[in-house]
Image (cartoon, rainbow, N blue to C red):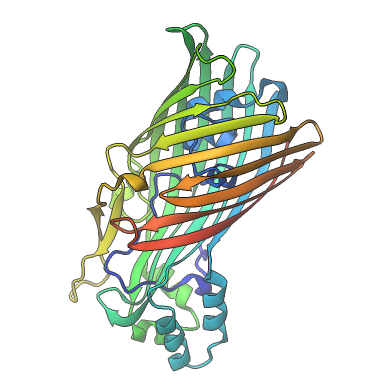
Length: 393
């Protein structure tokens, strides 16, 4: 995971609160983000292990062994490229500092992740899944003046690990079908969290990424367990209602409370899948995630006598809008040659949209959503665009 912080990924904000990207999910599947990230009572993909492992049961049995050899997602903030181009084109020290100040007050995030998995749905309604996760993300917040957060602040991480999932369905339980799921994961990460002053930026402008890595890198690893249930009652024939509950990240994925820590979250969701004659499928879902409000923001605990910066977690204001996910998925085609879905929804109070196109072995996805960053809604809003590419069957 060395050398994962190119110069283009170093910069950040004029606000006291820094981190801000909620970390309840290690991997944000573009297909799911397009429908508002509402997946606790839906599933259907191998990436259900990041939302509710019981959702693995909805991987179609007709697909037999389902493999996603490449599940690459690349996302970026709306104006991230503009900032990068301006910074790259600046020649002198002062010009580079001026670019940072010109972009102060904005937030820029870049993320690249890949989830490669193999899943098998048996004839006995038992599903196994194993996956390999690799990812890196950087949150960028440029500052006007070098206050407690410096002029360039970065919250970055590179991470990866192994994910195991299993789900078993039990028929005719309390008037419905009950699926129980279990997920296990081992995650290793290197995190980088620092507010750089003008002197550091100018002195290390030619090797800034190496300087940050050598000076501020923190290594952590941990195990986590996920438990989930999916209940499909025998009511409302033709509507196929479902209720989902999950407890995610049980274990020691708090990584000593550094950036990228994964809190234990309790999540609930409901969905319906009404039968519509002119559609292959229709799914409507609503989730309320992190019920106990375990998510945190991070604030710099400044001490001029400390050799390195220290960031401490602080509680996020319990704003219901940040917990709500709602989504709609329209399945247009699903056969051995082409599968197409259109997605839309609401994520933390802002719209989401996307599509998923599968042509035999090639998968292409696109999504957009807005992340609420900070201790309360509206403090910092970051519109992101995601492109997903995959190979599989």
